Length: 88
Length: 122
Image 1 (cartoon, each protein chain N blue to C red):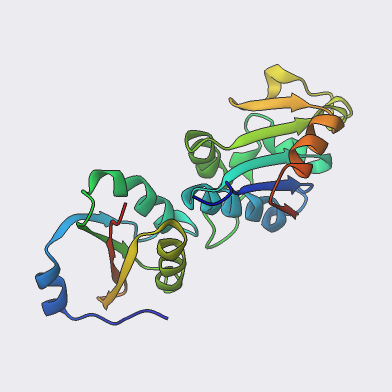
Image 2: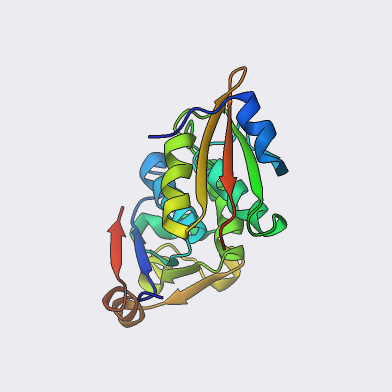
């Protein structure tokens, strides 16, 4: 399950970094999130773009496993904007 | 901190079955991204995936290609262990293998499997 966020929610989150993983096959978006996270300070938010609809569930599971906070997703034109808060 | 997790993935398919050849790399990359130690063991036709140039010939729709994932797996600390008899019967040796591939025999794989918290076989 993932929370559907709005543009206003995203604006309030103050995203620190955006990563475009659209067009990559599984587990490409997950790997992009993993690689990008060290560039985000603890407590800040990473925004991941993915055109794979399963990425929402995958990133939610990954975030729970490694200890980050999956905040939800914003549907966009043919892709999802996923918001993850770095927690460690 | 809990006990460190270690996943051993045995790979027994190569170009003969692109999907079963690719999925172990998908799982290995996802596990490494999840802070799980990963050891991949290649036997039988799976040995061919460690031959230079072969991974580039294997692809499956909607899965990241093996040739892209090998570098990521090595970068994230994954081990690539290739069974010697499988190489020998295919007339392959260390110089034929991709960077990072390590030739081993059965006892080393047994050590890895028996010390793992989980194993997958493809």
